[in-house]
Image 1 (cartoon, rainbow, N blue to C red):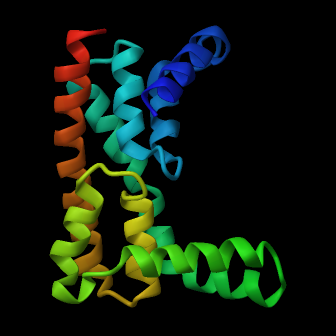
Image 2 (spheres, helix red, strand yellow; image 1 turned 135 degrees about the vertical axis):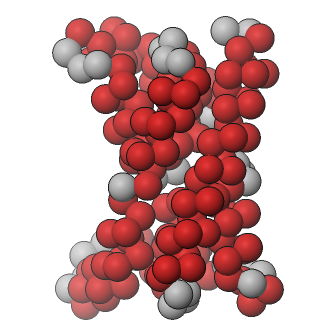
Length: 169
């Protein structure tokens, strides 16, 4: 993953960097599923953006899609399945969310907070929001847990990106 993010930073520098501010780029990177804030912070470090500025931009970029997922994903998925639009992908995403949601009965709030906050493959705000929406978690509690999880992820990824990674870059 680190090599892919390094390639992303290199691609930005050789192409979009002439037209788009690096802050806008990391904002957009943080909105992308699977990359999200975790990747945005690594790319921000590679592009030389300061810690606090990068955190603010990446958190905002990562949080923007979340209300839309929480409010509309079930209706969008139902429409897609009904009209056979990427039905296989939708079913696969629903199955993945079901598999990742094991343990939710132990406490939705803490489950979502740590699911979003601990930077492991397949976790993050997008997947956490998908789980919350598909399993009818309370939207207010889910939103707060996801936001706090993003803050935890930002802290952990900052330590990695600007601490550990900073020793080598």
